[in-house]
Length: 496
Image 1 (tube, rainbow, N blue to C red):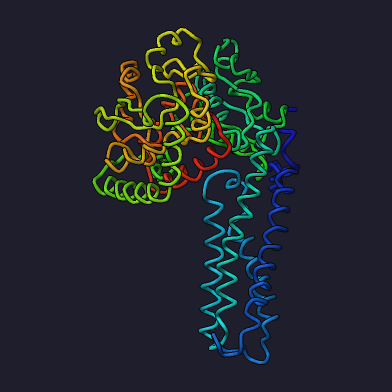
Image 2 (cartoon, rainbow, N blue to C red):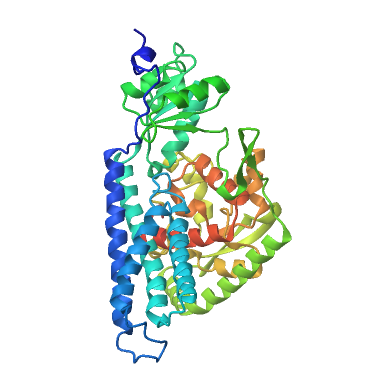
């Protein structure tokens, strides 16, 4: 009897299994439920306690006799907890990455606030609004902090190979290898590749072999391969070898709720705001907007740069004066190091830094160029223990203090607070044509390259991050990079 016939019931209809979550998914959701409830319970009754010392009528009216503040607090905790459950704030497809989880928490909380205000208006209830507004303001902040802490914990688990999705990749060997490489760049997403099903099972593929991904089946045996290797996700890396009817049949073979189908289009390094899903005649068309560099965006970025650089120069001026004195007294030579870099539209400008090397550092570079470059970077010259760096320079570099004078470059208009890395003219001469797109924006004091590894990055990763930033710029993205920069500097990640 065939496997299909064996799976049919007595009526000839395939039984539909109930959606089930894996053990780690159930465990994680339970943790969120408990911690959400604890936060909501705490902020509601804490707000009531804070406002309990105020005299009635000082900031509002007492509730009716039949409705005590304790009753209101209990009802608010119950409603808030229920709404967090029903508003998709614990959807597993949102956890670990992206802002959808945070948006859902904020939207659920604001919806409840609107519902409470509407109820008070309809029932014409007089109620002191102080505890209510305090509870919601404090609750939203603490709920977001709680979810962020759980996300950090989940990311650590996933980086250690736990609490993730077991994925089978299906497609051509080249496309499978490409997707596997991209997934390995983001272990926090939780996609653990267990094997590949390719259309040419008999042909060895160097890419898959280098990634140590075994070929566990063909495109006709995907469901069987998933069952054999206990996979819960299949990612199709291109439908060129799988006709639409075959993809549809594959989706029918998956267990509802436990196994998932992912179709990965041949798009990489595209920011979320540029992607729009538009169903047309039953086809899920992915629309990718081209990068925009209009005057409004440039004006906004310049305004932020000028304001931030002025403020930072004022606040950090005592530190910068102290560092200048230490550099002057510690070794002979100028305080500032000036170097020509390539900026917006390929124009040269003079970049300023606190001097962290000996005076003849540039002259000694040729002798060091024969030394093997660190981390496999074939364009950027970096040495972990560069003998040209002065003792005080090592401290400056470790905490990125040598880059503080670049705030003057920002104020002058040569650089931005956040942007691509400012390259040397000699490096630009080695660029491939597509890399020149990084000159569509001003170089930055910090950027994706700095918060993603800095000196430890390969040349390919440096280019990829810079181009991603240029083509997907947003003010929100700049703010996130600044937050990550502070963390990278404190941890001294990739600084030497």
